[in-house]
Image 1 (tube, rainbow, N blue to C red):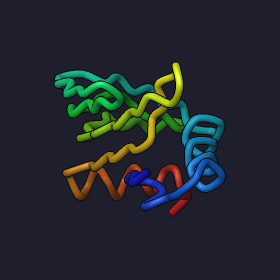
Image 2 (cartoon, one colour; image 1 turned 180 degrees about the vertical axis):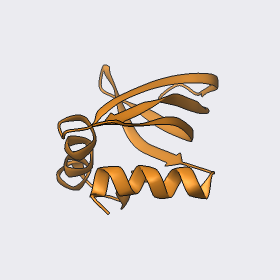
Image 3 (cartoon, helix red, strand yellow; image 1 turned 45 degrees about the horizontal axis):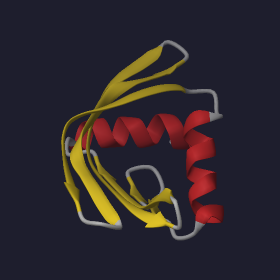
Length: 104
């Protein structure tokens, strides 16, 4: 996973720490995947698009705008996400996002 908050993480143990910080910490985060395209083969597909949403912590709120790619692979009969890349293009928004979630 390559994420604006956690950088590059490999394996669930590393990725789990980032998601817990985002979704189980004091911030309230809402994200919606939209404006996307799907690209598929027999055992793999990927989605390329944007996420929008909000992050609220205390009296501060940010409107989020993230470019994202997610890759899924069929493992047996189940689809598993095997890669996620998210980028916040606006440097000021990225700094505020990281500051709120990392306590900077």
